[in-house]
Amino acid sequence: MLVAGIKSRPQYTGLVIDPHAKRHLFVLEAEGAQALIDQLATVGDGFLEFAEILYVAGASASDDHAARLSGLGADTVWVAPTIAPLLVRLKANLVQARMGTRLYLAGTEGFIGQTMQVALDFGIDFKSIRTEHRGSLARRVQCVHCKGITEAVTTSLYVCSHCGLTLLVRDHYSRRIGAFQGVNVDAEEPGKAPQAEEIFP
Image (cartoon, rainbow, N blue to C red; front, top):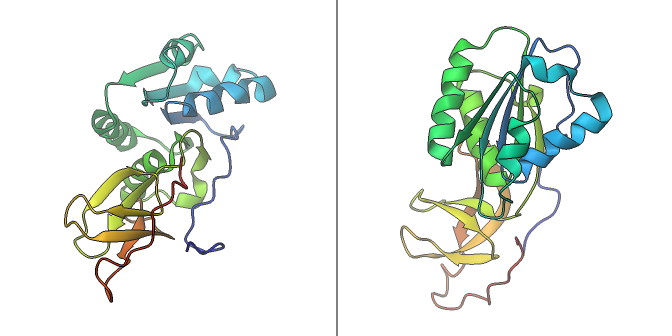
């Protein structure tokens, strides 16, 4: 059973635009694009002159997200084919970033976790990063036994794709690796695992 209120559970503050930032860097996945678009109704689009958008589509993204972002008038819009090159581009951006740059992340928890890792490696305080969860609740999970990471886990129990153990997906989250933790559910009585439930659609 999952435990509510675990302190390590990520909190998403929303993609609120910082009016004092000199430069805005948006890193968006799939429905995360809508988080930025929604801000325009509140604060207008003046900040986009000083904004760069890095975007990657997801399986559930509609085909028009990239086109809509490109039409917003941002200084730069770069569309990545997958998350891996997007992370490389993000690193390159952060190498060149100057004081006054604000970082915004929006998408699924797995995506936010991976992009947050890059930012933390550059010494950015996670509390200063604006984040908004959009899209699937599927989790990125690390097996605490073999350390393998499985993407897009949607059930309370799953079989580790690396070591084959049946794992319980806990609410404990590691910011360092950008993943929730999975622990062996039938260690004391192998084969006695409860039925898996779909709880992260």
